[in-house]
Image 1 (cartoon, helix red, strand yellow):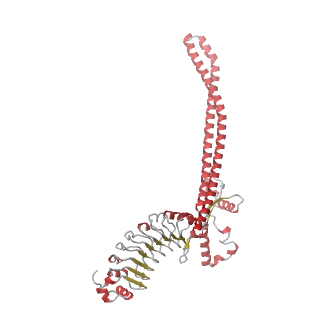
Image 2: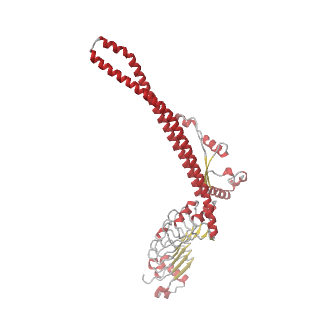
Image 3: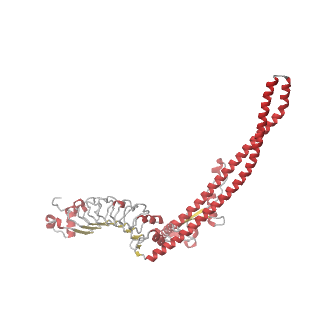
Length: 468
């Protein structure tokens, strides 16, 4: 750009950085470093006059709400824009030599427009408004990512393409399930991982049972976890513990499947026995039916040929009249046999359908229980399902609640007189339970009237915690 006409922004920048008027007008290319703190007039566009900048540090500059002016600074390697008012990431397309970018404590809601920064290795974007890590995959050479104190609840596949990532800090976010840790197994280069960090705080997942065991088993290549170096003995112990748990659940799953197979086999044997008995009766009926049909065919043939031989004489009519009663009996028997065979066929079909429904139900129950065990194993026991019994207090409470919500007059046109509860299942979710306890604790702190009588059965008691 042409020699600048100093404005308030540029004047304050030069004063705070020690850049003289001579340097500004004659030798701006000699300025390689700018460090500004609490400069209330400075805007980023003033940086465009210093083309050889290598490092820029801007902290607590209230007028900096957009990244601009860096299209004239292609040599910049380190950029700090912290505690300003940035809302988006932009204006870095020409900064292809940028190696470190610090955007802490802004208002950024999305990681974007960093694909052109091919040399970027370190990104600090702590204390912003991120909800996902989408956009990080554009930074192919990224080695260090700090995204602590945001609103990230899931990792998903956002880091699958970051094959160079070695350090990741996601402390003080909303990650609450082990499945998100499992997603990091697809980043084999990862060596340093933080879900809990003293300067920021914890994720909800850190408060779950078996947290460290699960992380060490799923991510054996990690050297430090939550700023603590991991010994090889700890990894081996975690692996052994997880394998024992896995063997235990596999044994339970195999036992369940074996019992299901045995029940189905016994049901098949009972089916075959019953069908065999029906087939014996069915074969007898078929033989009798064929005999009756043969007699009818023979009598029909005899009657036809007899009339052909004697013509229309009165003797032929008399002979035919004598056989009417016998033919009627045969027809009645044939109809009865036909109905009996159809009944036996229908009975076999009905039994087969019942067996098929029974088998499908047994397999469905077995698959449901297997899924429960897999969920319990995959979550380290932090999520499990419990079927209640009539003797359980919470079972009775749920039944009473359901009955209290049923209004007979609403269902009277449908002919429904009531509801019957066959099963009640309680879901134990430690993550949701911790959230509930934290929320209740916060409400009781901010609203003192809620704490009255809390010691007599408040949110901390067993009855005050939700099962779901």
